[in-house]
Image (cartoon, rainbow, N blue to C red; front, side, top):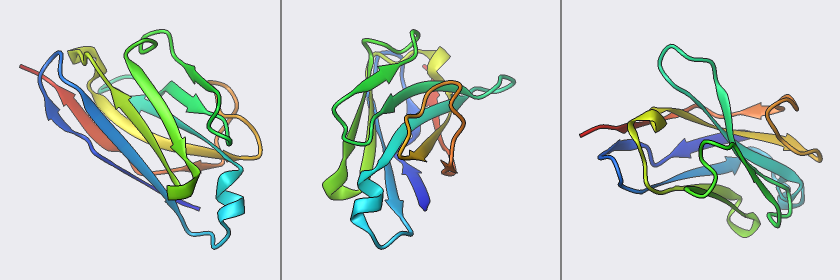
Amino acid sequence: VQLQASGGGLVQPGDSLRLSCAVSGRPSSKYISKLAMAWFRQAPGKEREFVAAARSSGDYADYAALVKGRFTISKDNARNSVYLQMNSLTPEDTAVYYCAANYARPVDASSGVDYWGKGTLVTVSS
């Protein structure tokens, strides 16, 4: 499984940004539909931290306290993709954002991750 994240960039405080993560590498869409997906981030000088996760069906999401109410994760099994809508961005959201996935088990802050994608940089600065 390959995960390709995109959508990062430089924005100002208060702006919105949507990250995308495309899943590829396995021919079976059924396999992809059983992937629980998540976003993590790593700010400069800090450890990587959990941001948000969606169950494989896409009908349940979990968020880190710091982003709850501002970020929304969504999984689109038809497009083999997961998205992270980020609103009301602050400089503290500046980080490299990573897409992650687990097969047939949820992703959370302590679950371990089966698949990691390369990150996409989000910079929030005036």
